[in-house]
Amino acid sequence: MAESPIYLDCHSTTPVDRRVVDAMLPFFTEYFGNPSSLHAYGWQADAAVKKSRATIANAINAQAEEIVFTSGATEANNLAIKGVAEAYFSHGKHIITAKTEHSAVLDPCRYLESLGFDVTYLPVNPDGLVDLSLLKNSIRPETILISVMAANNEIGVLQPLKEIGTLCQEHDILFHTDAAQAIGKVPLDVQAQHIHLMSLTAHKVYGPKGIGALYVRRRQPRVNLAAQLHGGGHERGMRSGTLYPPQIVGFAKAIELSTADMVGESERLIGLRSQLLSHLNQLPDIYLNGHLHQRLPGNLNVSFSGVDGQRLLLELQPIVALSSGSACSSMSTAPSHVLKALGRSDQLAYASLRFGLGRFTTEQHIEQVGSAVVKTINTLRTL
Ligand SMILES: *Cc1c(COP(=O)(O)O)cnc(C)c1O
Image 1 (cartoon, rainbow, N blue to C red):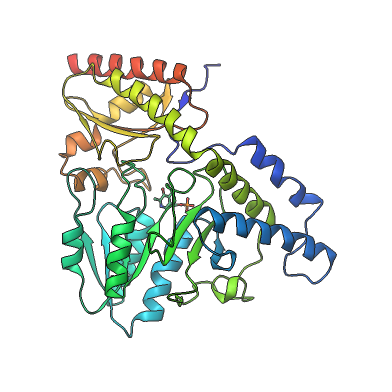
Image 2: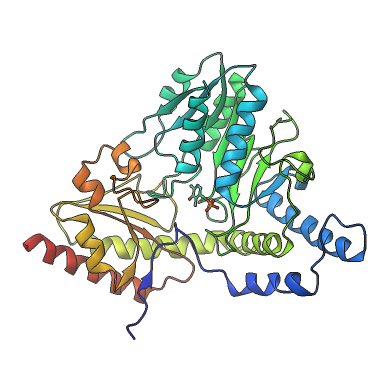
């Protein structure tokens, strides 16, 4: 059997950290209770959920009661965007977001357009950052929500949350941020950054898939949300459904581990990224996608002129698992909407590689991948 390729696709998902698995295991069998039950089994599970809620809240400087558990960031984004639209439409029906958002933000926005809402999709600067003066000029009296992501899943660019939050505060607009890629990797603070709603997920930071959360501000101001799942009234009525203690405990453990070592791990990843970039810099005609410094430590996204994107990925597949610049979801073969928003041509958008470095990436991995990519590009360019 051939060896498994090196995994450099940490923006898609990450393996669950062994310590997270160990924390989860007792909650499948020993402490299996329903946190809503009023007996010893329920109380045990409820205590674990409460503790996890506090850990997750603490990581973003929120209160435990402000965390609403969901199945992941897709659901959290849907709850935030549709929930605000439904609760605040009498104040106005205008929403602002950016062209480089994840489909889990763009698609709920498009859905709302079909219901008569008006959505502005802001273009971004060539480095992927939102232009704050353009954002400010797009605000209307009827704007109820601005949704701009914390960290981009393709190009890793970190948006200026604090500046956007301040703008929202000044104009009395709710601010939602999709922080699926940012949590556990860069500092987040819902107070300092004036955030009203924040989407989180566990599986991009070495936690299990199928669990995430929406932070919903309770004070100054108290945010109202229309529930999108109705039922037993769990999670302050905002998201019904029996809570899932093993996933919740694992989510909290994953957040605890990644926030505890955020500074050291960032430095290590930036070192590995520089090592990778110096390999790639041996090649002429390459284009870095996204701001070099204002980005996630583990992200590098590069376009290569003069090669076919699909062929490139195919050649690299036995050596390294990573993603390219075609819309990966569904069966679509369209070029990445994020790279197109940076102004890249279709060819450069297709012929791009997204490197997602993570906790288990080593210098040896980077050496192997770096030389394989350089060699492959050189070969493809001579064809
Ligand atoms: C992965 C991701 C999502 C979707 O999260 P799930 O928990 O898989 O639903 C949403 N937004 C961004 C930016 C992501 O990277």
